[in-house]
Image 1: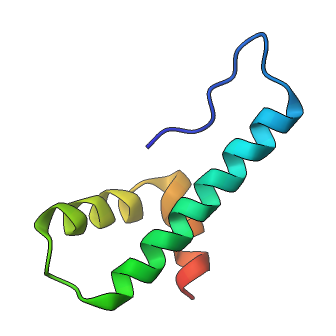
Image 2 (image 1 turned 30 degrees about the vertical axis):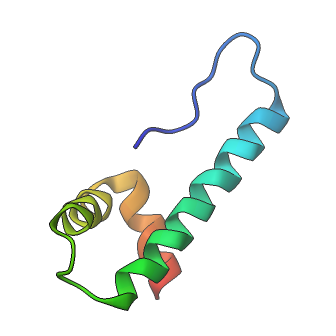
Length: 65
């Protein structure tokens, strides 16, 4: 997963929208991670990757705390 792409035409609203989408994605993953662990190996791999990364891991831990 990547952060918001910034180009010369990017405005503050675009960055805010991208941040909101990222938070929404993390909230959805946090809820799904509590349902049943071990059902989907791909989802488990995605979870490991999210928790490993510095940018997403911190935010994810805040949501699940």
